[in-house]
Image (cartoon, rainbow, N blue to C red; front, side, top):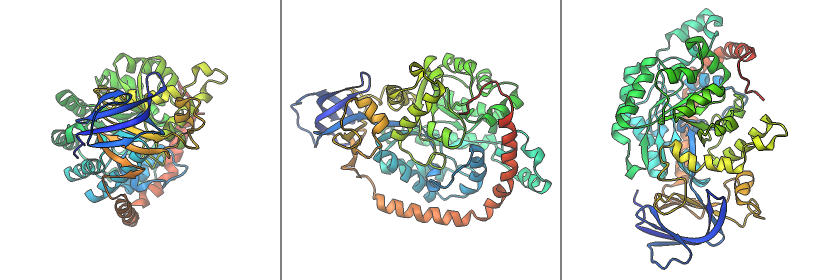
Length: 497
């Protein structure tokens, strides 16, 4: 992907993410970066965009998604996270590199067309990652033209073993099948992650980064967690894992380690400025203090937390502790789309029921806009490069049509972008100085052809996984029973509605 050497956006309304105000200006882009921002710039450029009638915002940042989910989009309703994890063992099985490419590509297209220019993608492969599969996901983001931190998710403990009380209530025939399931070894998973880092970290002029991703601490041995941490220290990359997303995960941690997940990660040296905890729903004030003290960050996923019935995260308490929070869509099988405008709206709305008639404690539009821009950039390890429109930053920006049913009358730009905008008004998207969406259309790939191929792949995979879906179908009533027992137990915190 080669950026235009120069590009100028004329007469556009810049949304200042620090002051949350609008001002009219021109934007001159040179060599992938914002060079000047001032009215009536006297300069020529290779390409000129008329920004009249548009609002320019920083490219939104998706702090937590899963590329592999896009071929199973909207498949499920009334599933818990544990249901999803169980069915995923079959639904994501034996995908080809082409399948992985298409799943990542349609997700990247959806994000760009709704104003998201960068993502932290913790993608899964079953039974395990391959070098060819990782390369295919990298190529998808390269072709579509999106910035990404790729985190190949790994685990070496079978999910069913991480659910308290499940194995004890399984009939002997089902338990025997579960006991025959064998994950990859920690050593093999660490080798795969190392190869991905060595091959792809910093590729495409820095638009492709790679991170480690032990998927859930409760599904990882200490050998795997410490192996990922060693890669973090060796290569200076990040570590992104799901933390206390559900009450079941937190109770499993207490059963395994005698204390919370955060306390265990702290004691074993995993927490630090490199660390991103996905979800962090079932954490208490002491956990929050530990995260803040170590400079760790959180990826908040309000839509999937609600759809999967996981709970409402203590966002106000985390913000009060000065934790850096990004906001994520999560995967499209958990929350059905990759639209960060929707994630912001749900993130602001869901917080308000936690503090009845105490609006000063609510999370508002300005809070979630920071999560989707300035602080989301920090979560991706790109806090000095993106998230704000100012000279010297990478040229990742979005032009929104301001004369629309969603944004007019425009009394307050921040409120309108969070509570009213749906992503429909995205007209132009620029990533690293290159126009990747123009007049609402992807410029980099044949979107129609990719969608057609993705639909064919999804239909084929549904047929091919039919026999493998028998085990999760038989386990489902026992899994739900074990989880219901956990959920009913008295606990030190309550994050249910």
